[in-house]
Image 1 (cartoon, helix red, strand yellow):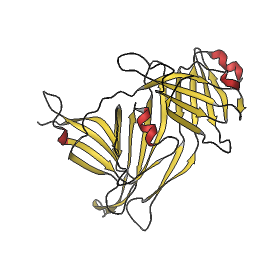
Image 2 (cartoon, helix red, strand yellow):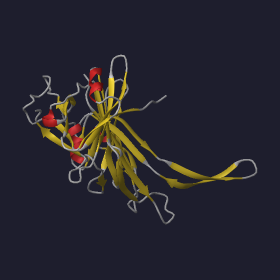
Image 3 (cartoon, helix red, strand yellow):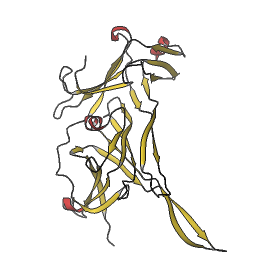
Image 4 (cartoon, helix red, strand yellow):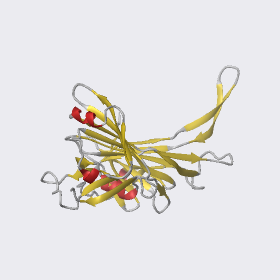
Length: 298
């Protein structure tokens, strides 16, 4: 019996190769009309297909440079390709020209969340809403594609610190953090076509979930919410340094997330931890989130 196995390796957007890939998935989202006789099914017809794709990456800089607090449009010149490399029984990998790939050249790509726990690498979860370009299927497959030449994986990050309040004097020691982008992307079809041909970012409802072992921090907010329309909230992700630990705080290697106006509230206090929810708010001028991918930690 012949068994074939594959391993997800990289994702490529235009010339950018994203590393640290896991959880790659594509779905046909196919709805069929079924023709029945008195007893049995006679035929099926493809009625509608809402394809989708998703993956996770530890390359925060790579994906944030593609799309941050928004959604990037995919086109024929800015398409996304996901690769799985073929594995060989009793060896390792087959030639790179035997890769399985899925290509998406119309639609939108966005980050759904960025999450990290203390002592772990941060991970960005990415979602893709493919649409029809009028010619090609929203997702096309190949089992003889050539994978990009292997690149050195050297971008990974972990939680570093946060500060907020007047002059950034307030802090919460982070045990875990999840930034939910809260992006709602609609795909729309028409004229009886089988695929959607239009994608749009229709709303943004971001939240930040925080846990800490310092349950005393719950005292700062009681069980209500504290609103700050003046002072920024700053979150840092420290870049891990290959062959060492972390790059120095003063090096411009880290990721800085700036939240302008916001509310923060205590969700719960348990035996060993407290959890909080931050709701970023539009201040009338600035983006709700601002990401800097070459920042110092101050």
